[in-house]
Length: 354
Image (cartoon, rainbow, N blue to C red):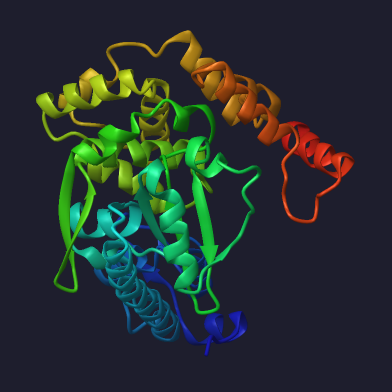
């Protein structure tokens, strides 16, 4: 049980830090609370163990260890769920790739427990999205947002999110980002380069390292919230390790029209973490992003929905596909919005809402 701020002040003194400053128990308790909010308990625990006096901060350290234990217990449960879901998808003949938390933890972190996560993200092919949805639904998942119109999941969406009665959320991804940047990615290429991780002895396929880096950049710039250390850390952990890999990433980012996202992500990490990327990553910044990409990024960062949908329409190929996307956004056929007026109102909110 957490003790009150008054008790902390009375029972715990100041602790000297290596830079000569100090932290009292109240400040440290606030750090613990924030770490829990942003899933950074292991990072705070590692720093505190090396830098602080556990005896002097006693009760607050106990709070931190309990918070870290809960965080890691959730990760163990999620990894068990990941293996179970992997078996279900394999039985259904649905290829997939593990994204984000588990992949970074087991492939890029030195110690997997340093990268906690709170849900499961799996990438499936567009052609398999309907079968994958059936698999997750049969396992107890409830879809959070209805498909706007038939075929939208397979053709245009980032993916589908599911909640479970137990403490579990599964996100099935078709691509790596919402909106125009998700529509420009070569989805077949995502499945061509892979790397294998092992969870509880089960081999699972993840994206190759260059694509993990691009996904980390997309998640940092477009995903948020930006107070989560893992978003910045994922970019630093997956940054190209040598010039050939940097050249590969730069070429892939250019083809997928993600150069502006990559360069902005690296700027964000430099600003937030005082991080200097390796000299070998020069290829990522030597060529400026196109004016078009910079305009796309500005639209996303400014939350201009209507402009964002217009940009998406421009990159969608084929007149019929453009019309299908526009109809899905402007007049979605979602449950509870069966009348034409209700559907148009829903579409207007999507186009102009905040």
